[in-house]
Length: 158
Image 1 (cartoon, rainbow, N blue to C red):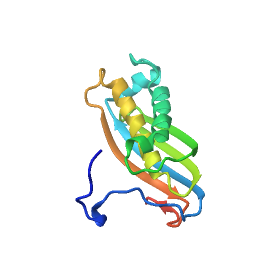
Image 2: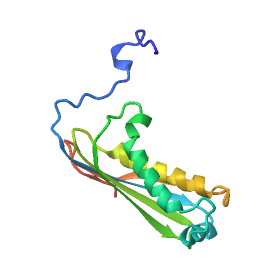
Image 3: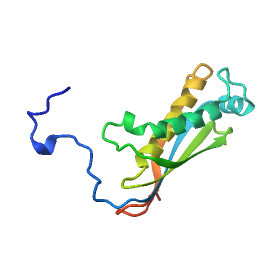
């Protein structure tokens, strides 16, 4: 275990104390894009990738990633997630797959990190399942689109 006794109080990393916050319905939507050769997207749509159902596996990976966020991001609170929805928009002509993840909970803290982790995990899964067919697969534009609930209210990216 690391010894942090040499750090003063303001430099210590710690989980935010949310004990006094009221639980509210929290929702976050994150989005990211995976860019590849249009022929690779067409192969995904046709079920022709060597590793199998790319989007089906990526959807399950996204759910697993959201559920394990506090294991991956050191200062995130473990949350009871009440809903996770993952949608893919396929743009074969431009070689893009857009991932949207919506995560919900009734808690004292938000689910932005869980939604972002879901998108990243789905994108990495797509990358893994397509890398042998397309060396130029790129993950891009991962961002929070919307969040609601809590004291800070609603945020919608313009």
